[in-house]
Every structure is written in C-alpha cells, then in structure tokens.
Length: 315
Image (cartoon, rainbow, N blue to C red; front, side, top):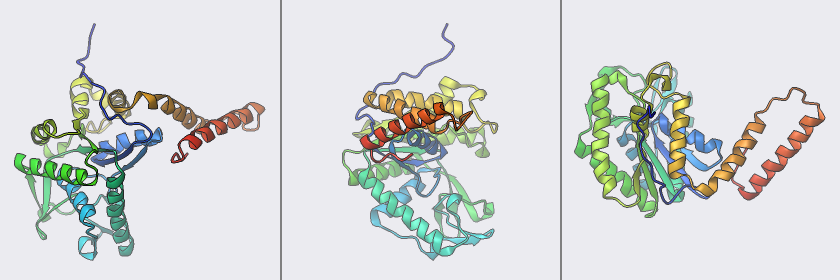
C-alpha cells in the first residue's frame, strides 16, 4: 500500500564530492542544509551577512562583492543598544560601530573569495515580498523590528524577479562560467503575510524561476518546497511554531538531496566522518577504563587518516 506521493529524482552532474567547494545563500533553510554539509565536513560557506529572505538581498550582496563596494557609517544605524544594518541579519549586530562595519566588509570580501572558488552555489529563496525603507528609498534585507511606518511593503513582479535571477546568474558565471547553480524555494511558511499572500509569494518565485532554469546551462532546481508540501504533507514534520520544518523534515530533505546531488564515491567518506563525529560526541561510563583508552586510540587513528587525506577537515 502506497501512502505517499513521491517526487522522482535523477542523479545530477557534476555531482558534489569532497573536492567541491560549496557556497550557500538565502533563507534559514540554506543554513539547515549547510549544517549538514558541515557535519560531514564538506568544504562549504553559508550566508556571510546572515539569513537573507528575498532574491534582491542576495543580489545586493553579490553586486557589492563583484564591484568591491564597502560598507560605511551611512549603511548602519544605532537602536536598542547596538549598531545594525538593513543589509544584514541581526546576527551581525554589534555594540561597536567600528566592529560592525569591519564585519560587514569582511562578509563582502568573503563572498568574493567564495565566488571565485565555488564549484556549486546553492540559492534558497524564502519570499518575494520586500520592504522598502522609505527614508532612503532602498529595499532592505532585514527590517530589524523597526516601526512598520518606516517601510513600504510590496510584492516583486515576475519581471522584477526574472531580472534579479538573470543578474544573479550573470554575476556567478562571471567568476566561473562552469559553476553549477542549484536553486531552491524554502519550505518555511511566511504566515505573517497570511496564507494567501504566502502562497502568492512562493508562486511568484516559482513562475519566474523555472523558465530561466530551463533555458540556462548548469542551472538546476531542487524541490525542497515541494518535498515538504507534497511528500511529507503533515504537521508532525514542523516545529512547534507550525512554520519551520523540524529536524526530521530537514533530515528527510537532506537524504533526497544526497541521493540526487552527492557523488556516490563520497558516501563512504561521509560514513567515516559520521563515525568519527559520533565518537567525538561519545560519553563514556568510565573514562579511566582500558576499553575507553582503546576506543580513543582507534578514534584518533581514524581522525588522523581522514585529515591526512582531506587536510581541510577540522574536527
């Protein structure tokens, strides 16, 4: 008896292995997947400016990196005891003006370095709703819980989204014409906009994105949104807020991503890494026993063998 509708997957190329360099940008779902790559010790970096929800925020960062446009005092503001930037997530907030500007510019430099090195770029879009800061007439990446009257809310049109996606692809390919770009739409539901507006937002992203992917070389779509909506389709796969996929859902999506995108030759190494990770997290009943000493010795040998083969791995 089949109790689930399944999305079919093909093995994608060029597949991801331990020589790949991955750069992930976008919503908190991008960070969920980056956590998986980090656990298995793939070479990856994620969101130098923190979580970004809409495509224009990602495009702004890429343009800054491409043109080496630094942040300065005009790009930050002080509120609630710390300095903040409408271009970045609150995780970059700082009590020091000098430090936040330095961190913002370090993020731009890191982005440029990652674009130069990346073999695969994963872009996760959460919404096509944007907020314009009325005073500066600019679209912000994050409102930082400022009064709503300071912003004007709007839905990006299909033409605006297409232009944005095309610009993103153009910048990525300017660094590496052969870069593999993987687009995905976040399964996180933005219900502050309301059910209808959330669905409208996701639909805009989907409608604008697929014609471009279908007509552009080395660009792909991974159906993370569809996996949650059409395969899992149950509130037991959500966190208590009923908006964010829970760990079980993230694990499930990772398995499907793995089957589609991870090179089969990397699977054995992933198992070795996972074994070491579990060993490092092991809590012995008797840390002074001979058995535990032997366990640590074997674990050290396994770890050394991995690091010898893959010097970039840090445990």
